Length: 457
Image 1: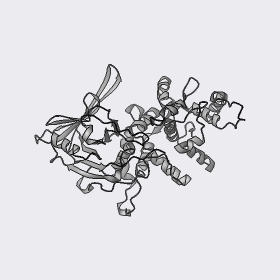
Image 2 (image 1 turned 120 degrees about the vertical axis):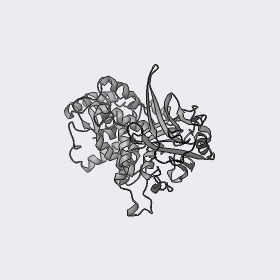
Image 3 (image 1 turned 90 degrees about the vertical axis):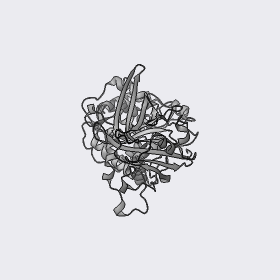
Image 4 (image 1 turned 45 degrees about the vertical axis):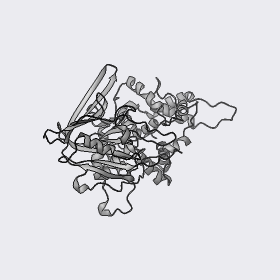
């Protein structure tokens, strides 16, 4: 463990208790330091390594690689130095990182070296211990005997990942103590959200399979707290105590969700999806509905901005918008999060607080049909009213921007939107993607009182 067996479709034979305990030690982030020594003679187990362990446990082996070894070699260093984003300790953590890919083997091979290094007998203090490289002959032998696969040959079936995500979203919030059996949600209620997150991990050319680069990108940038529910569940069930390193697990649920009988957007399953990227910033139990609009009673540009910026300085805001894609007819949900509505408009604010967990700054996001999270750039405008008919959230021509404009009905109200994403692949190579939608459904603006951030440690 946690290496899969080649061609194994069912996850291998049943585990013994000892094997299960060993597997859990690989998964649970606050136990890894008990397995792997972190020093200049070895390497630190990074956040990307932890995500990869989960990927390997879900993936099947395939005969042919999904991408070239040259691409894998370019991607590997990003994972090798993915340390905790704490500015005070980042330099120290980075000094403990080391290469995880070379001509002898990929990340899985280097993890074997790390395991072999970590289980060597303790040496007498005045004798130097062997380095990780000293165990390469042993790792080569194990790789040949066990037919250890390349990371490039592993992929998760999309339906398997969707099933896991559905469960993780359902476990995101603690059950309300007053919930009755008739009002409890079922796993099926989280299906749309799980499919949206899965869609962020797949591309048409991989045929409903999730490769490691796709998995890593989605869980690093788009849903960084998705696996917290998994760690919390495993730690609580098998160790009898919750993990102390989690942000998005057993959260206090929203207490004032909008009345869903009136087709408002925000539901508990959607709040679970939002928590996968805003758990470091949002105390969901404190949110309440500030303003809501329908397609027939939506505001004009200046009224919308006035509603958004009328928030007291001690509050933050989230806005959700729902409609139909004008090309495909699919239901779409977009949103924005602003921790400082009074200041984020003309210039996105830096909200970092030393030694505190989070928070996230201004960001745009998409919840349906494909999950996406796009952080704002400090100093760039959060939103701009181009005129009485058009407001832009984000910056035109740079990254992701969301534009709201007057609809085609001539009502004088904001009822049409578009999202444009500019992907910069090189200094002179840009790809522009634009989708438009009509707001046929309701949308809402929510605000909450800020809560003091919990200090790390």
